[in-house]
Image (cartoon, rainbow, N blue to C red; front, top):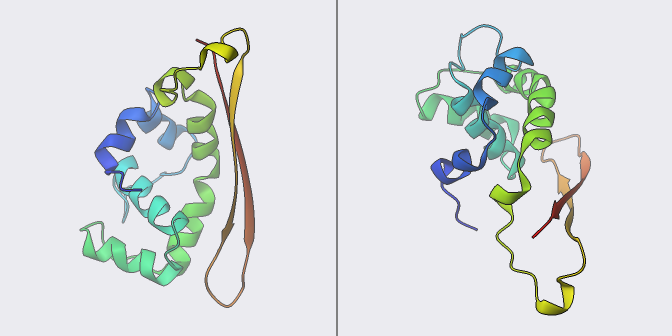
Amino acid sequence: MDIKIEELIKLLPEGYQQACYETKAIERKRTVQTPGELLVMCLYYIYGASLVETSQLAGMNGTGKMSDVAFMKRFTKSNAWFQWITGNIKAEKMCHYQKPELLKKYNVTAIDASDVYTKGAVKQAWHLHYALICFH
């Protein structure tokens, strides 16, 4: 799947930038200056980059020098922000599915269950479950 960050940002709920500061994902503007920079780094890590690769990305994309440990702390602090984002996404922005005629009288729920495994010496498994209920 080839999604550009600009396309993804269009799908984010209004106020996601302010929520980044309110949830303390960014407290001081040192290395990571904007919610967009933090989002890119977190997505890079979520999609399979190691902590070292993600910290190197910060230097390559102009964000600034950041150690892998510093990024992990920042990523951990982003938890509440990601919860805010997912809790405020409007299903109609994400769901462009036209129900078949035989399902018209039913509420359709789209569900995803994914397993994400971290790289590195200590392997971690994350089990992500997400559901969108679409009313048409």
